[in-house]
Image (tube, rainbow, N blue to C red; front, side, top):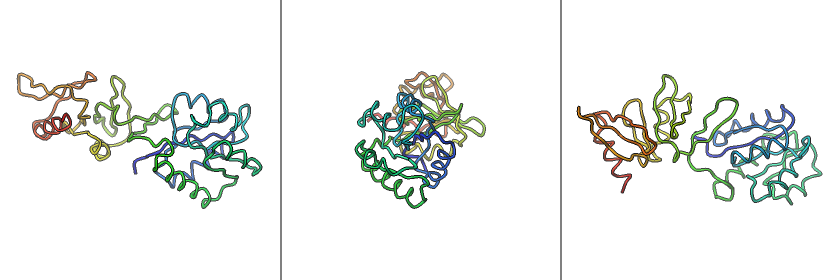
Length: 241
């Protein structure tokens, strides 16, 4: 299943973060984007990425969960699920507009109920539901690539290379699998090793030897195979109307 929503887990206890990861693994439409050990890390990460949900420990060294929300403001926070070993903060949590409040250790049933409520909230647009995207991981972090930003994708042995402008990202996924995911969002196969975002095609050019080239607004030139020429040309014209 393609991930629809992204998650940040913030807890100073590694086993607590791992516990959230394990329970989220049963919900493949939620993807863990990153983990933080304290409130300062959470604030720094939220300046760079926009997860849909944050599982936020109340008591962390330095800046606690409530201070994170105070500094960030509730309006600029993702949907917040508080995690704590104590139930005494519940009223304060909902005053901070938290989505839910989980007391450790959390049972699977209680966690699943929270995720189901998150799913309804995000699906209804009350949270920050993401547009279609691909999540790539590497170097200890994950990057969300909205499909509208991707120019083209090429095969790279057992991987695929995703191009966003002049920058590329390597993902361990076949081109055929990616094609199934992105075709409904305005992409088309140009040849057996490349998929192109149709509204990013600036021009279709023919070389002196009759080869068709898709010239992208981002500057790349992608050959179109003879077998796919008619289908690709029709798809580009349809996307432009």
